[in-house]
Image (tube, rainbow, N blue to C red; front, side, top):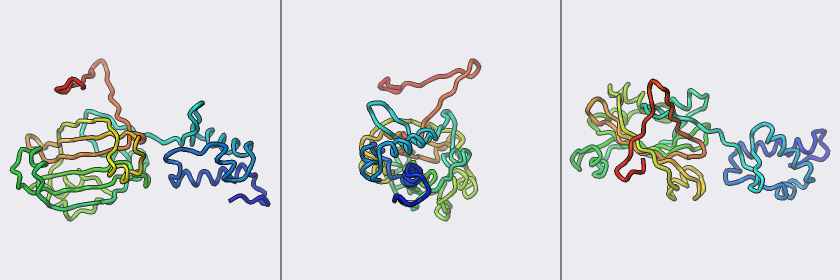
Length: 251
């Protein structure tokens, strides 16, 4: 990895290699210590510190006294209080959104039917995806729509498109209102594997009901990495700001 006959300084070679490893997601669980880097690259501590200093100056990593060095992960902000599309949120920030479809099928699901207040044998279109931002897994998303509404979606390619765009184009409907509940929790083993995160990395679990007028047309459950996503509430003297308490008073 290090060419000692190259005119490129050693610190620059270490810097280039570290950038490549960071881009490949190698340090998602933690950045090496200076001692680890000295041993890995077989260079002096001064060389290692200069390479890491350059990463820090460029905002690629942060160093915290007593805790170590961490890769800086850009956070995607999403406003609350409106029907939004994750696809649109990412694309508007210049981030490429791509989905890996795990399931697109029609099936019965008695538990889901209960959310809709429909008979247990009601059939639904089930869309399950891993949502990626610049090829990094961001969210594990499952959407359920009554087949009477969403059956044309079975012909759609959801690799790089928005569910609501396809729903409007193919089915002639789009959610106009809804309810969303966001909770913070630790990921399940399945979500840890799908999102490539550690057991102690918190996630947001988002449960959404989407309505077209008085009719409920969507039940969705999404698990989002909290290190890449944040929710923002804005208020003003004219519009105000309010919260709704749940039955147990936790808000």
